[in-house]
Image (cartoon, rainbow, N blue to C red; front, top):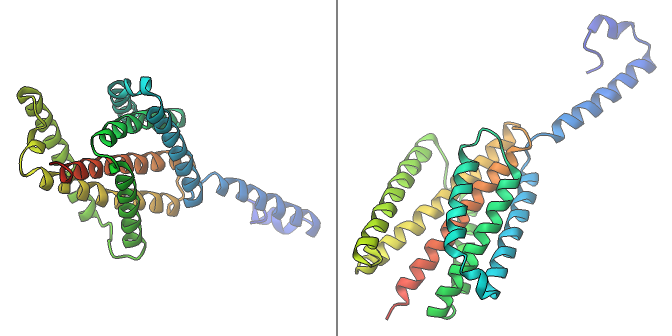
Amino acid sequence: MNSHNPVMNRMLPDTIRQNQMEVDAQFDSIVSSEKMTIGGTGIKILGLFSLLLAGAFVAWNVPAVQGLMLPAALVGVGLALWISFSKKIRPAAVMAYAVVQGVFIGSISSYFEAAYPGIVINAVIGTLTTAGAMFTAYSMGWIKVTARFARVMTFAIIGYAGFALVNLLVGLFTNSAGVYSTPFAWLAGLVGVGLAAFTLNLDFEDISQGAANGLPREYEWKASFGLLVTMIWLYIEILRLLSIFNRD
C-alpha cells in the first residue's frame, strides 16, 4: 500500500512513494502486533501458571495460610464470575485469580497429601499427562471442535454444575460427601475427570480461533484465563478420583 489516494500516489516522486511505503509497512506491523497470537497467549499462560504455583507453594509450606483455603475458594469463585461476565477484559483480576487459586490448590493439596501420602505428585502427573493427551488429540485433528461438540459440552458442563450443587446440599444435610460417600463415587469422579479433560479442547479452540481471526491482543488474557480454570478443575477432579481409589 503506497497511498490512500491512487491518483496522488501516481503523482508522487519515487523517493517519496518509497518513504510512504516504509511508513505504511511500519504502521501495518504495529497494527498486526496488537492482535492476538498463539505465542502471546502461551506467554500469558506461563505467567499465570507461575503465579498459581507461587500461591500454591506458599500455602503448601505455611500452615497459617492453609487456614485461608475456604476464603480463597470463595474469592476465586467471585473473581471468576467477575472476569467471565465483565464487558471489559481485566488482566489484573486474572492475575489475582491465579494467585488466590494457588492458595486454594496448595491448601487442599496439603490436606489430601496428609491423608494419602504421594497422592499430590500422582495428581500433578495425571493432570499434565491428560492435558498433553488432549492437546495431542486436538492438534492432530482426532478431536474436532464443531458447533455440535461445543453445544454438547456446554450442556454437559451445566448439568455437571447442577449435579455438584445438589451433591453439596445433600452432603451438608447428611454430613457426608454425598454421592462421593457411596460405592458409585469412582463413577462420579471418572465423569468429572472426563468432562474436565474434554473441556480443554474448547480452550484450545478458543486460542486457535482467536489468533486466526485476529482478535485484539487483550483477548489473550481471556483465553489464558479459560485454560487456567479448566486445568485447575481437571487437577481437583483427578485429586478426588485418586483419593477415592486410595480409600481403605
